[in-house]
Amino acid sequence: MITNTNDLQKFKQQALQWACVFDAVCYLDSNNFNDPYSKFDTLIAVGAKHELIAKSGNAFEALAQFRDENQGWMTGFFSYDLKNELEQLTSSNTDQLEFPGLYFFVPEYLIIIKADEIEILADDSAYVLEQIEQQSLSSPQPYPAVNLQSRFSKEEYLNAAEKIKQHISRGDIYVTNFCQEFFAKHAEIDPLATFFKLNTISPNPFGGFFKWKGNYILSASPERFLAKRGNKLISQPIKGTAKRGKTQQEDEAIKQQLRTHTKELQENVMIVDLVRNDLTKSAKPGTVRTEELFGIYSFNQLHQMISTVVCELQDGLSVIDAIRHSFPMGSMTGAPKISAMRLMEQYERSKRGVYSGAMGYFSPDNDFDFNVVIRTLLYNSAKNYLSFHTGSAITYHANAEQEYEECLLKAKAILEALGQPAAY
Image 1 (cartoon, rainbow, N blue to C red):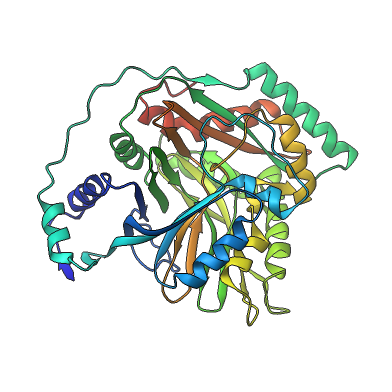
Image 2: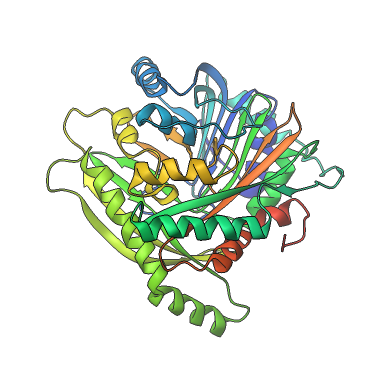
């Protein structure tokens, strides 16, 4: 069934509110960013006809079998700690969120929005549309203030960053992504209202809302991990961050500084090299190329340096193997990849879980598109545990104080959505 609406934003909110009575919901929104690789503007997958829950160990194998059995639309997420089944790695840090290693579901209902056209894929699509249009949007209810804590004091973070730089000086690694968790126990939030607020404050091209039973992913991600279009794989790592200026003149000056900043350029090119190497495992020989290097893109909260690396997929290689060969994404690990991941398990104080993982979909033509789960709030409503991580790249030239400030800059939109002060 295909229909239209006069108020698309309201329809999306009504549809998501209707969807949230189900245990499985995936909402992906490009927020009107112009992306040559997008198949749609918004996708809403609702209700699980079939589902897969897997722990790290044989999760990718289980997903490959699940995909073979379900060739239509599928949505889900990968947790960062699936790295442990791909390499000789472990994760022994604390995990209070309790998301699975991966979760995918085949939706009962699917809503696809392109421009102002709404397509509802369901046995009873007219009834679904009626249920959505009858939704009266609830007003946000007041909740107690969230009491955020950090796993690191500022001094502890700075000391850890300096120790990581010593590893770089010794040649153990070249670059890494060092992350810290901000969390709140006994936190009560309205996940849907919080997501709407976050998506309004920080609309990004890979924003999304995911509900798995009582666990929620509220994402304002600007980054694509990996997409497949026909026989082409596309990865778009982000490395390089700068704040927005208060005036247009200041904003342009900051963009120019980012474009020529030695440390930002170095970290971007190192990760581009890593991504190229990862894609080589899935590519036809000689087809890996950098489509764009050091592109500067502006979002509400930040400027980002984004590069695009592409390749042609090897004949006969499964889509699950294509993802497995590049997971976790280079922008969230470092180089050399395995050494950086192993080292960060020593210095970080919490499991990343879904943070640094990926969320997205497989389509019936066997294409897929997954974001990088960053700028994202995670919530376990049964335990009332709320969490978000921020990270930044540590290189030889990194200034630990500036990297700490970058972490806070990346947290700004989430803090605002939670009604917290912008500077933590």
